[in-house]
Length: 209
Image 1 (cartoon, rainbow, N blue to C red):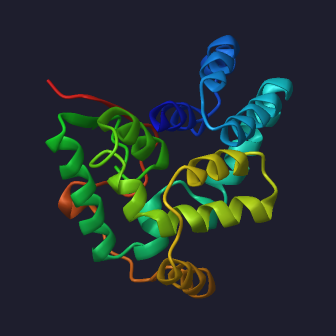
Image 2 (image 1 turned 90 degrees about the vertical axis):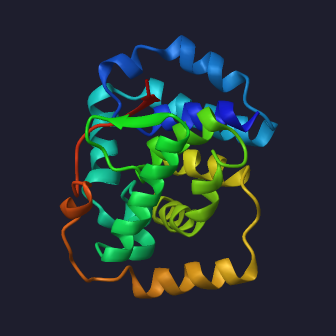
């Protein structure tokens, strides 16, 4: 059942272009199948805003939220590792996990982009598919907190996703608090050496052939 939420959230966390906004009936139908009730209500509330707001305002909100604020970017490994060698290794591990399940990323996107991670979870299912979400839960919580602080409607999607994941333990809560206070590491390195460009622009996860 979580796969429905992950797949819809993956789509709704991409740039709201004309094609996405024109798919209102399909988006509503997908949201209606989400369980439990509280999670479905959060997604429906987001759709109410998305579909009732002029497209240009929705697009500006997306850019303001995810492109212009580094602390609310959609790249999960950045929250824990910054632009360091450790982040490069985390990205490589993600890329290898996708490949092991016959999936590949097209469009040159990084494998830690949240819509990509959510699509993988929906496609590969519980266990291996959802492992990246659990492993990067600290990043998810930091992103969730940043969205809540900004008041953006996109916070509803993060609330919904986190609501169906295992509860945070005390150690995780302490780690999130420390990261929130200190920020990510600041060592800057190139990621090209391991075949991962730093900030590409679009992504699709699809089955490898």
